[in-house]
Image 1 (spheres, rainbow over the protein chains, first blue to last red):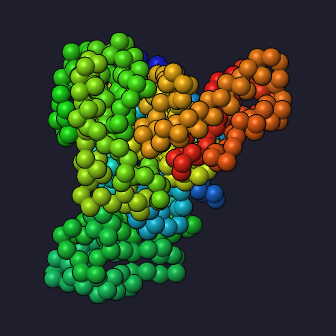
Image 2 (cartoon, rainbow over the protein chains, first blue to last red; image 1 turned 180 degrees about the vertical axis):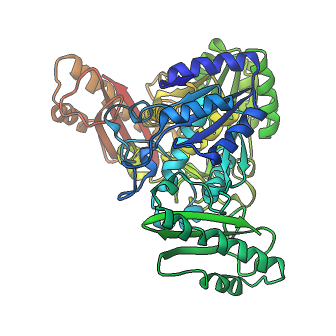
Length: 283
Length: 283
């Protein structure tokens, strides 16, 4: 079943809470793929009721980003959710989420702002304000759905870490369940933005996971020095790749690592055919 | 009963929720007076269980403000609450609320930030960051207590409007109950900061409500022009008063009024003996 109105969803959730049912939330922007499906399956398995939100959140897109052309496939998404045992697809309009006039600036809207130390690096460096929009909408969804568990993919690892930090800092009564990256057989991490790539672009995009898995192999062989591990990456790059960042950071607080250890995550962002792709791996 | 730990409170609240009991929250910084007591009584009357939080919130004090010397009277506060039928006094430490190291800057802490249009005026103008701290701590308290109703005094009217805006914008499942200003027989609005005033200072402080009630009288007589209404105030002031602001604003969105109407609130802030006092009146 699909619900578009907040109040209608609230009523349903209230009745579930009264029955003592547990609720899982999988927040998405739609264009669902097998990555999302793995989160959905985990929620359906763990919770009595699963709600998948499908909302292309305007306030997490930065100027010049792909808000207008972001893929919207609500019918297919709903079908996929129903087949997977989801109770409700929650697909509100921007007006339903942000009110009449769509006044979405911080002049007129209350924002949830993650700590500067967590957003001034990696994706936050080029996507200024992105995580403010993410935290604000996720906070709203938590308040609307009041889930016991919420499921986030490790693909957007910085986002996952920031959401966990928000939940901790604001004492939000929800347990965040991280879900592993799902990859194509080729190794390419699934992403809704892969749709923008040509066949050749998809081949070029394999460089992300090649670099990461190579670093992990080197680390397992005993190389811990981050500078040395970083250097192993460059031989994989060619003129079709524009590297945005390759960084080694702590998996809890995003502090930079000079020497890699078992709490290290390697983050990469790289542009292929003007499509921004990200990936990461835990050492 | 007094509780200092978040987890202990959560357990109790969970059991109340299971029983279907309604919960009222009265957030305070302690130093309780009859103003607070009126909120508490309203909650006790309306809700099955009432929680009064007593927390001098460091992040809502600006540099140079009275964080250290702010009155702390927990024993008396607890007694007053018990006598009034409060179920729990929740009195966490700063460490319990903000964690080890008390790292409370926005470099390392998630903040809830009210809209700029609501904070760049009245008290927000001189107390930069104050309402960020208020919204963040109230958001935390809402997440910890998950109250059905929360009670705020109209004395801090800008705060009340900002909290209502936060609840709306972030879809927080709580109903805000505004409570009228309580005044001494003299007309002085009750405030924990009145304790800083000498006997003579308390007399001088009567100018706030004299100005406000005089404006209301003039308004009721048919004077609607804000400039004319403002001028009626100046005759009340003397060298012992430092006027910070006297403003006419919309009661919902704080827009400035040139012509007063029934949606207008008159806000005043004034310093007596270096104590900052505020008051307001609805026309």
